Length: 573
Image (tube, rainbow, N blue to C red):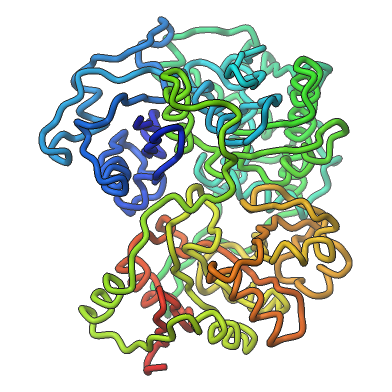
């Protein structure tokens, strides 16, 4: 089964499922090198990779599923639109094979399936929250061994995702692709300064009413939804609401850096901007808490699955994980629209009888392309680069360089799913020194200095640094830092005292785990490092060895650890 995600001209992706198991998943942006693969529905390169991973052709795929309904608001189970199918899968990439039809999986059902089906839970409450898809912006569902049952939904006119992104846009942080910045800025603000009384958390959920600014909460103009007129009206209404609070729209000044030739955003922020960000973050969390409580009550479940674009909000996920009655929680690491490919493929597999629930738990996001030492060596040789093959000793060698304060591009194994680097395509540094964090933000990533960076640590260090032994494999749930964490890894503790960790099991077969263990042995400090995605501000996470070499060459990173090889700028190692 081949699932295709990203139906709304962004975050296109593909996932291949065979016998109920995820074989491969990748986002199209990693191949096109265009962040979020904006303005295109094409999943062709991601799909071609997935098929190559399994050694099959598109003609051998039993069923192809898309994660939206092109006929919305009319119900539809299949799509035979030849132009749309050609837009999704360019037949030239697949021996000119042209699928005649694809299965339609409703957008929020695909989201829900991407979280529940690979959770490993026998039953769970499922919470889907995003901007909007197929006219829906929030869904509560019950996942059982029989599949998913939708319990309640909120229309696009009640979108929490759109609320959050309009705050970020109003403050000049960027469009919807930059909403995550708001979460970082919120850590510096006072959430009680501004009352956003148009959005009200209430038992069973929440209620949004922008009537004062020209949009009634009961509006259901489907035509205005499909042609984006409603979305544009909504953004104007929110802009007026925030302006009425005394915060006019902010256009961030960008300056030219003559040394690098880059255009850099203003580094600071105004107190009122941080306070509005904090108010929006707090209000979002309160609404999500009410939704989660309703889902848990309605299902009687003690496990919670979270997904949708809002599911990428680590701070909110931390609040949900701490809710009374939540014994376990799974957040899909590819929680945004790209992850819908996973849900579409798994939902079709379930319907065909190829997947039995509960299925295997998703414990890794390493589902993308990998490259062996021979392929990597060829790229390095083609570029005429000096390198040294350290073989199995590479993690210990890199640990020593990290302990000396160096920054390293780390390219190992399969590429990760989702927007967070998890040890396949990472930039690593010693989390003990805040100056290294600032160097990475300012000079490597070219981003605002107030944005947080995250830690990766061995699971055995979690009780000391996180105050819990619960695994956190996907860097998507925030935790309060312990006093030990504040002292030992301050570079990854945010201004609000939280961190968003990735925990790794000790495993001699995993270079990432061996690196952490070796770092602890060489320093006498916890097995923890600063870990951020291997890219710069204008590109997706690197995918291929050529991507890694290009980004390394264009950055002030000290070293590149790629496969068993180590490169150092300017001289051989």
